[in-house]
Image (tube, rainbow over all chains, first blue to last red; front, side, top):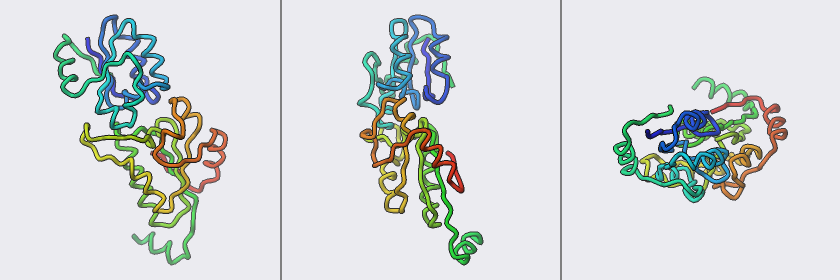
Amino acid sequence: MLHIVNKSPTERNSLDSCLRLATDGSAVLLIEDAVYAATRGNPGSTKLQAAMGRLKFYALEPDLKARGVAARVMDGVTLVDYGGFVDLVAEHRNCQSWL
Amino acid sequence: MSDEIEMEEGGGVVKKFMFLNRKAPYGTIYALEGLEVVLISAAFEQDVCMAFVDDGVYQLMKDVDTSGIEMKNFSKTYRALEGYDIEKLYVERESMELRGLTEDDFIVDVTVLSSAELAALMAEQDVVISH
């Protein structure tokens, strides 16, 4: 399953719910305001770090650049462009958007 | 329109306005719309300040490049505020530090205040407008 999160971890609890309900081996793609979770120093990065052994994390690079945080991405998160976003959706049997 | 004329004829009542920004930019329209309102308010010659709290501190990040998401980059507009006599920009220290940010990460010079200091400043305003 591919989980897609688009809300800031310091504004909504979407990331918490996703991490709680995503089964081991799932992929999590962070887009829009959720990309802040993948930045060093953000409280979301601690949660990502804790889940990194069982989930694979991706972040949409155009959204990181638009927010001025592309240079702050934590280790272990794979950056993708829009083409990579499409590939992730195609590669996984199903996906879930945490709106 | 009639309000504007009355205010000018009345000798210009100056009130203290705080624009409180709590939303990250680009993910929603709040930050851009809020900034437009602040710029419009400059025409009314009021005592205006802006406060950045919670995810609102992300509005001030440097090195913004929106070409990949095909949205207007309005980050540079914060630097133009000075030209509109909006020079009082406050950032809540607690919000900044929670996100691992420092003043050096911001595109403009700001005054960093503690929650208690910002609370006191907020309490002395005539009007607080939140986006």
